[in-house]
Amino acid sequence: MTMRDVPHLNGDVPHLPRRAWLLLAALALAGPALAADEDKDLDLIPQTVPAPAAGETNAREPNPPGSKFSGRVFIQNALGFTSLRDDLLVPFPPPLPPRWEERLLADARIEWSLAPDAFVLYSGRLNLLAEENLGFPNRGNVTHDWRELYASVEPRPRDYLDAGRINLKSGVALGFNPTDFFRARAVVDPLTADPSALREDRLGALMVRAQHVGEGASVSAAFAPRVTDPAPIGTDPYRGFDPLFDHTNGSNRWLLKGAMKLGDMDPEAVIFGEDGHWKIGGNVSRPIGQASVAYLEWSGGRRRGILDEAIAFGQRTGTIPPSAPAPLAQGNENRFRSQLALGASYTTESKLTLNLEYHYNEAGFSRSDWDRWFALGDASASLSPRSDPGVSPRRGPGSDLSQELWYIRGYASDFQEPLYRHGIFLRGDWVDFLVPKLELTGFVLADAGDGSALMQLEASYSASDHWTFGVLAGGTTGGRASDFGSLPRAASVLFKATRYF
Image 1: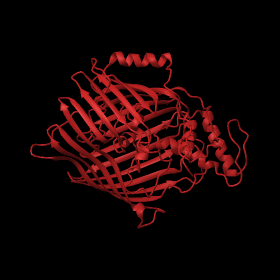
Image 2: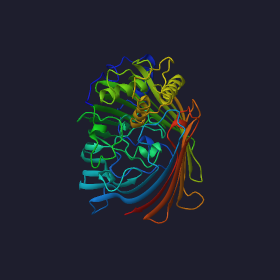
Image 3: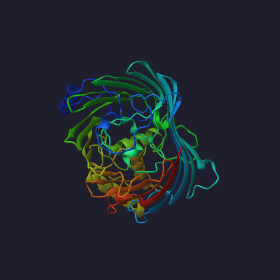
Image 4: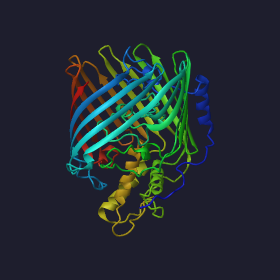
């Protein structure tokens, strides 16, 4: 099937409603400098998410005297097993997720110092993979995740210029980041479902970035050009050493971000553009006492509902014929929609950090959208047409509406967009749990509309400076006609052994 162009998912530069301008103005008055360090905001929240590697923040730390290299290198073996549901209301199209997977990987994040004011940073992972139905040996057994490779110079003190493939991150929340505009299509073959970990372990985009970090304010600008057509949704098990620029550089994107210190708050304003369409957003955090921090992250822009965006993207990339009627629709209305993450963290004296967040996604599924999704899936499974409002009939012999329905959910997963309208996220991290060097990390992400949830718990023990062993267990709960309860994966467990160098 050939590539077909369809109208852009958003309209022209939006005429923003008064509520959006008021919120942006408040953020701008609190922090008029347009924004810089993408990890600076996270430093305000007491948590134990792994610290960024050298060169990942704006505060450039020199290499040890006499050393040109610094960074982190490790080899890890990960063996995972998955239990699949066999009673899905909407049948999952083949191939099904693998029930077992064995992965041996070599991971490196290395900074090479060229001069006192210049360095090159590489971050990547080489995977040797065996899994159910993949076969061995074949070209799908070896893949490479090229996360970052860029050069950085400091032409003047506290001014930085970067060029190459960069993982540009934004946001203060942990479970969902409305201002993290470069998250789309950046995660490949994850070993965890923890959103805060996925944000670090993902593909960067080819871009140029300029930053200034002042005493009380900072400013950053980045531009990522379109270098190829966007790839269709779907994981290619035979991607090998493909850099996947058709995932990260399929459109022209730019971002301006700035922050300033204002008392005990660090407000930040963000403006993002993609192929002529704009979004705005902001972050703010404030300590509450000695052990707690409250934070807010918001973004908004003109867009359609996620159902309509998925169908439009499928038509644009040739997966869905332009003439085919959409199986579902949210009204195809292009209007201003908001996303929000509101949360707080608390750290105890026993090294336990808890984060509780509320998420809102105005472009997500309403209850009626879910009802139509399940109704149409049931109709597809029983090979009988439905006449429910908003549900298209079957398209004739041999058609598979369930594949299009799961395409919509695959689109949301690929773009890291939550399908729910309202969500609750709870994350805990306990360092030295029961015994020294044992760390326990877990989270629950719940759809507040139907009570279904995604859960994960990980225990990691550092046996020495070079060896770490861990086990990760996860699963989904909920009724058959619920967000997470309708996913094919019911439960999973992963065993890890890591050797650091």
